[in-house]
Image 1 (cartoon, helix red, strand yellow):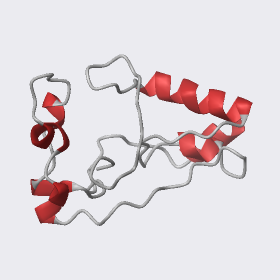
Image 2 (image 1 turned 60 degrees about the horizontal axis):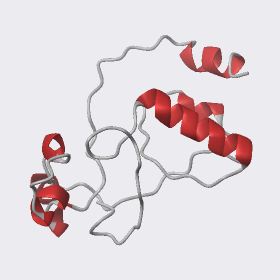
Image 3 (image 1 turned 135 degrees about the horizontal axis):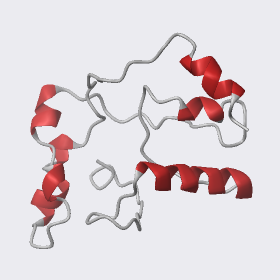
Image 4 (image 1 turned 180 degrees about the vertical axis):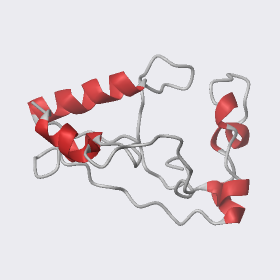
Length: 124
């Protein structure tokens, strides 16, 4: 999406398309918080991590992408092929019509009613 929306970002992660593992993303966010550095990255809900930074200089602020209508979703690139060096730009980045936010996804995680308070109590 960032390619077609002229949002210049670079990722230097170790996976085939430059991405990071969940733990690496946490390390990056923690380092940016400690050094008061700017960082942009993908995050999702539900995940309690964003609550750890609420009210701090490192509070996560969403970047709102265009609404994910079906035409946009149908024109997204195949994420399983992003690391393929033989892809054309269209195959790697998808059609510009596919530059939208992520559609809602169901989750298989279950959280207890005290999950959020447990995270907040143990954030140090």
